[in-house]
Length: 217
Image (cartoon, rainbow, N blue to C red):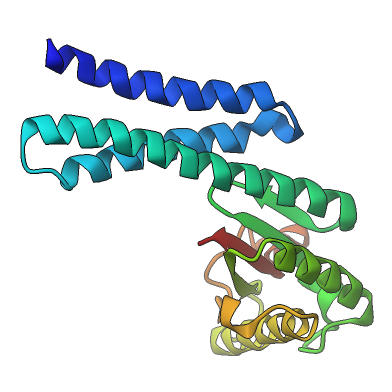
């Protein structure tokens, strides 16, 4: 009988959090919050199982962990939803924003950030980065990775170095706009992580970019 109740407890706990998120309404119908609840409940249940010694303790801890993990997941999902909606309203349409439920990926095309072969952030992009910095500061419990990318034109070593220096330049603008340097890491990927084909000019343009990845702690 106890073994039959265990999956029912987990399912009921997950359903409570999913329903609560759905009833809230709001941006994207809180899809990311519901996903966060489900992921959090699953991870919480797993943590509860691992932390117990006996079958009874594992069942009890899994149920408690699912509830606690669901609450944490809801909070993370809601925060990401709010920040995403704010950024979409505040930033230009040529800036990409992806919310995958675990982090926000803000993509700035290289062609609006830098002149050819330059690592100096353009004046036009300073405003967008200042807006992004203000958003990052409104959500302080996150870390930020600034990742530079290039197309495959030219020497791979040069492209890697250029992507790294451009990532550092963007990170410096965010820091100068008030973001704590302890929250930011700059990374160069060069031509290693394309999002489109390098066989066309349109694809190469998409691959030349800087991504700011915002991840809840």
